[in-house]
Length: 213
Image (cartoon, rainbow, N blue to C red; front, side):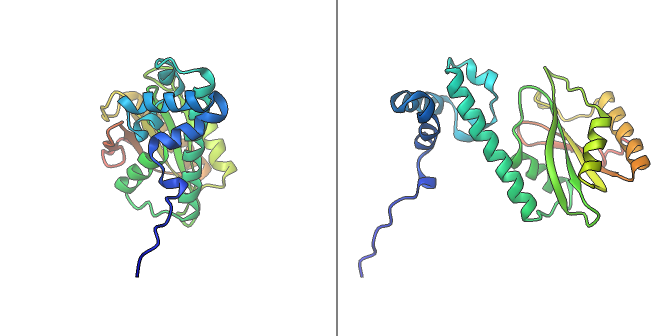
């Protein structure tokens, strides 16, 4: 019996085809093809997804093209987050959390800070990026963090922040911040489980394991 060939689905298109389809409504088919080819000459699709608008701007892309790409990748990230939460992803240890973060969040040139919020049954409620730095540092408002935990009815949380420099050694500021969040959590009955420092290459440090607070 001759097997009937099934046409490739849209999701199986080459990266260039996908990028061009995202860009065509804003810059037209020809320019979209050119941009997709230009990007993929130097980067693969996961690397492009990790770049922010400022870096894409250095490649002389039009603002509307940058906006389209940024929106597409951000939407993809949020949908991934929803899918993981809906599937009640099992985050038993620091390794599984680090893997989850690598799939769900981009590591920017600027330092980013976020949290994973859990309910009383230790199920993930939400995973969010909450603060973004203007450079190599990120200012975190503990009051905003804890308010978000209360709004979500979270009873525990895991903090994370990125070190774009590649080192995952906690700084004195990182340690002090963890202590402040732990103290605030004790008052509000929101337990701090861990605080992970993640790097672009996927390496990480668990501050809980290092007994930083």
